[in-house]
Image (cartoon, rainbow, N blue to C red; front, side, top):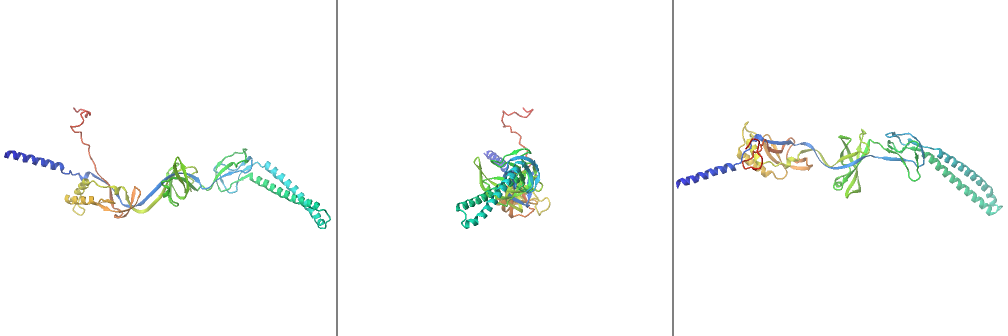
Length: 412
């Protein structure tokens, strides 16, 4: 009976030892713990809205003609720089000069008729006052004078119109700028009977351009005049151009049930790199803060594995102890437990020398890359972004594996 009792006690002791060893947490070698950190430093945080637009000149004028005829001379070409009122083309003036000469002759005839009727009136008016002529004869004289005046005025207007048409044969540039398009050739006939044909397209100063961008209705509420904009074009993928929102138009555009709004962005172009018609990929900075203390947003999302943290803290030297000293495991346990309780809300884990501890922080603006720190840590503090065990080796397949899976070469 005693032997049996001793045997049972021995079995229970062995089972307790095995259970203790199985349940005892296995320590991780602190040298195999990799810690990713970053320093709190001065930076910027911003939120942007993206939109696609087209580059255009601020002022573009289509130059046409108000008279019909044959293009006799063209004085400018594509990309020519022109000045205001400069003659850029001329229409054949043969017919226009003939019409002007004819109207001049008509005007001279009307003037002669007016002079005759005026003299006749001046001669008969005193006789009519003395009742020496009939009233009907004097009325006819007045009628002839008024008719001569009307014909003379009509001849003046017709002559003036023909003079203007002759001037229209000389096409002038309405603005200072550059010729973007020339739609006619010398010898080509243009007809201005029903609409004004476009001869040239002239853009104003290309050193100042603009981008017309379409912003989705979900983002338009954040876009305001005066916001900074950065944009790129495919022609210069490595260059970033800057501009500013100058106008937010209220008129919506609906395409396939998608509502967008047009915004105008100024685009300085001192180097003439930008050209009308280029597609611009824009980023509108709807919120932006510069020269502030920031840390990566990943630091606020970091929550350490307590076993790794315990192993690391237990194996590290004391901050103020002798070289090679260890932090007692009981103290490390207390610190880890306190850290776990403190890791609520906005907390970053700061590594100073060999000590890791959580610090509550007050945060501001967050752009999912960096977050603004208003209080809690100082510039230069080293915050932890990630902690993981390195050097893990995949475990070998156990004997209880799938018997249908092929084994390694040479294994039976």
